[in-house]
Length: 278
Image 1: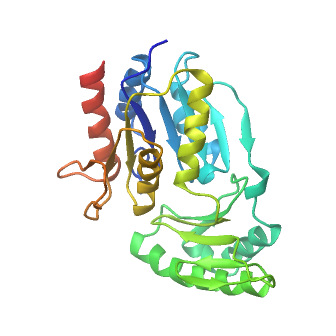
Image 2 (image 1 turned 120 degrees about the vertical axis):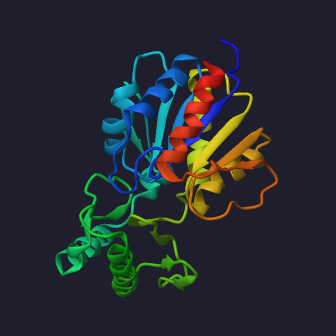
């Protein structure tokens, strides 16, 4: 087997799945199917659970030959399309008190804007309800994150929220509250898109040669860590930023999709690649 000309490392929420509806368009799945059939390896690198990506993306695309994997929960969980096996890094599993605090806060009033994602295996996560305006969720999220920080600090966890650090009795902060546009995760500080990129390389080494070059696609600042990691490892990488903010300056090429963001931009980029490579 020769090395494929390109590999794709894709965030899910934003580039693939709509942040508003959490659905994946048939057209985007069709372009991914064409790329996979042409021998282009695809790895999803996401904070989503294995259950979410398996149901919405892996199962619809699995055909037994495609090099299709998912690294979920920011590196804590990984799976391969069609296998049914889900692997979990036990070192990244948050303490039970994190799940308890998240559930209690949602039950105590924050359920008007969010719900608990019970499919996570290493994280404790709340997600925005799809029936409330984004501005309302973001306002409630700020209050939720502050209440969660206070509760986990009281429980003795060493916890971080953005630049704020609340050390544990040993002076450490091994856990992090990480808000995004549609969710708040409690996670290990070891988790992240860079870890996901390393796991992606391990998965692809097991099923064939690594690609000659890469496109990483994401909508948030944290998604640049995928391309940062590949670049640091010596790979030829281009990052495609489909978020609403101006792109960052990096030592590798960064592209946008003019006039489009989120899943519309992600679909346009994949359509362009499918037309060129298949």
